[in-house]
Amino acid sequence: MRSSAASAGRAKHPILTAPRTPPLAPSDWACTGATALAFVLAFPSPLGEGVWFLAWGAWIPLLFRLATRVALSFRQAFLLGLSLALIVFYGSFSWLAFPIVHYGGMPAPIAYALLLIPALVLSLFFSAFLWLVRWGIVRWGRAGVFTAPLFWVALEWARVHLTRHGWNLFGYSQASVPELIQIARGTGVLGVSFLLLLASTLGVFLALRETARWRRAILLVGSPLALLGLAFFAGRAARPEAPLGTSAVHVFAVQPVIPVLGRGAGLRAPDVIESLNRHLRLSEAVLAEGKSDGPPQLLIWPESPMNLSLDEDEALAAYLADFARRHEAYLLLNHLGRTARGWHNSATVISPQGTRIAEYHKIRLLEFGEYVPGRGLLPFLGKIPALAGDFVPGRDYTVADVGAARVGTFICFESAFPEIPRALVQRGATLLVNISNDGWFGTTAGARQHLSHAVLRAVELGRPLVRVTNSGITALITPYGEVRDATPLFHTATRHWLLRLPSSPPPLTLYARYGDLFAWLCVAVSLGLLAWGKRRKRRA
Image (cartoon, rainbow, N blue to C red; front, side):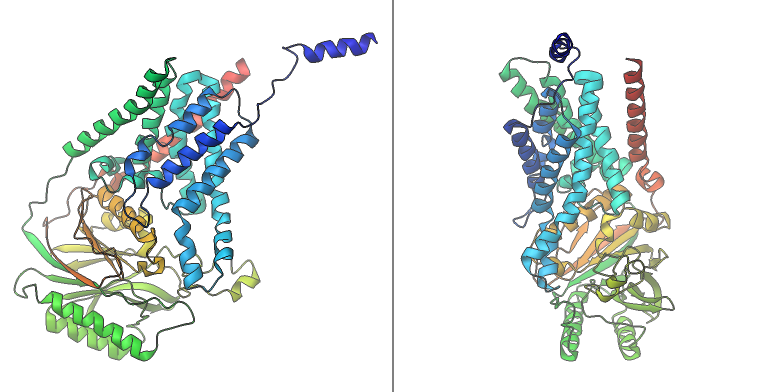
């Protein structure tokens, strides 16, 4: 009896009893939902540009809740991260199901169910972020909330390298406001993500010092707005000067809107002929705006579903060479390249003399779209065809000389991988060209989000970027990130720009020189904080 009584007494003693983590409350779910909704709305949607300013305070609800919560278990962090990822993924990435349903022939319920897989992967990074921020608050009190920007950038960097995809990193939400993304010239898009998290963090930190609700509300809203204003005016002051070089080049873009029929449907011979003729008619019309005796003319055709091959069709190659000679223009077009290694998704440049002077084979292929990963490991994957065709990746970064301009071309969603255009700029490119076929996305948010990635590439690398697409959005992007003469989706269109470029390559931006140095620093500091915090815990 005495022993059981003593045990009961010990069980009730406040020091001997392990604290229990309170269950998740409705306020936890509400704050998670508010952050997720602001995250989604900040990005482009099928209706147009996103409500970009929401990103500057998107994390306030959840960060404030983490700072005021008694405790958070690893399981609870995972549940909140999972719910956050599901809302964000299905709200911003649901367009991924469009090509699977419309061109892959898969039932919509199955296609949307398959999106659970990448959503679950994304949830791991969100959950780790919530757990780490809560850990920082426990270790350093209110100041621990300032670990959020560091941990976020470190985890976005990890997400890019572990999943090999960086679509819709948080900083891309600001692509429509050039003044707010100028930091990317030194830090890349992850520097913009850092600023956005810092804005929410600053508001939460200052609000935690106040007990009056009205003062707290003012600080939660006012602090991010103050940082936004500071970033805006700093970005405007950092506007790069226009090049003063005397060299120029006429750039012509053709948006033909060739329908995407999907795998297995193919294009019948008359369709290919009509599609090619559409390219030629639009090209002749827009070339009439240029002057053959003036600066060099560069005519750009988009990535196309026509499946032309200059390596296999000698008659076509001869005809296009003659077309370039007759119009005294450089012709940049997409075709199926063939080498000893296999088929490539390629871009080639034909000179006004009718010779092919440059060839770029797409390096970063799209999983299940241009190749099927894991075929060598899982035999059944050999029966699954790639949606657009089976290709092998290229290896070389090719720059074409078009008069005084040095043109570096990359294809489709390679715009989401800054290392590819960065390598082209390091090899001397003064003009970047991104050709794409966004017809796969239909009228979803995919095309607008794709444009946002190209905008950040132009700013990071300090080069004008011409984006030419099959169905939109075709546009000229300045090194400052301004989008000019954007075409509407699914409207046949042409564009003509006279670009003045310096006679020699301009200086490289910090990002072009050092790449993700800022991200590496955030990773290093994050690891240092974890080691320091663990050491403090042992001493305690």
